[in-house]
Image (cartoon, rainbow, N blue to C red; front, side, top):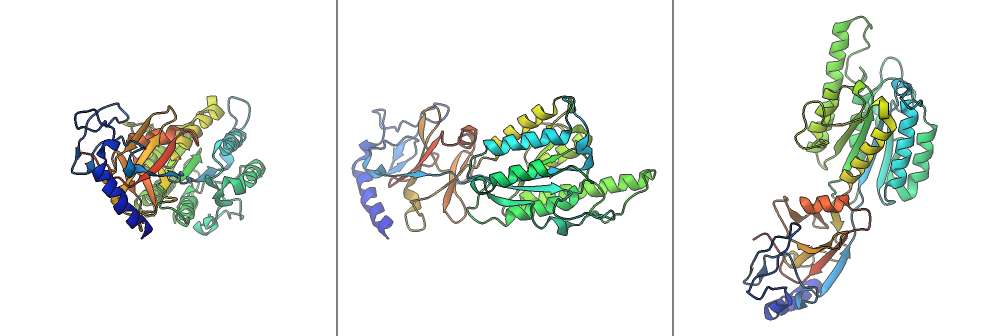
Length: 386
């Protein structure tokens, strides 16, 4: 009730002191967005602009907001083919271990990271076939890097490459691990899949094939790839959504890996085709390509969700909340709320956080940790697109 009482007082000040908003002298609010465009009216007490003077009476309540941590599960193919050499003279596995180590050292300490290998390193996989039950838990459970960074680095360094490619067994388990996370309803629950081969027969319902039985081998490939594709689709269509970012060698089939990226909505570039929507790594530059792919994914998985640490809209008036963003270059703007979630911010489910969408989200994701600032302004009517 304290916030509601405060809202009434501040709303009164808003009506009396609209001069606290930046005007151009002609009754229009200076509404400069990311692209520098100007426009929008102040009409009937509703600000349809994008600049609020922090000294305005109605904007006196200024609360910093912290970014919700992203959650990454590294799903890593450690099958025997990862022992194949690269042009640099080390195996794919050694190159992958080095690249994963660098990724883990670059991520912010509050990032929740987990690790799952396939085949699993937690149990012995029989020759008759792997099972989904072997992936009911991760090798390293998801936790903030401040708690498990050393364990992740040690496990990556100590684990060998061996066995088949039971991707169809591992993918459902990876999605389940991320869905079990508690906390904010973040859009950033992501799997980073690294693979260098097609999935094997495990968890398809089809047994092993005679190496000379081409029909059997083709059917196994069809069943296995279809199973993984179904899992990836279920990840993004279920709740909470789990995206899969796909990194692989050409040995894993460009068409298959691109189909996974398309199904997950994580295409490497807009307008990519049937074979180039994933992040591809080649033996000629294996470690460099993997570094570049992991760095690109690291930026794309940064969350655009910010906690309402001090303001609780369940007890305050959500129509009197605005959001101000200071970019790494020093640009300051008040971002309008966009319930259509195309360009602006909106509340998450439960209204315990806000999520940015569109260009401003891209800017925040591209910024290094701590380089951008998000503040909650309480008291002025919420800016919406006019």
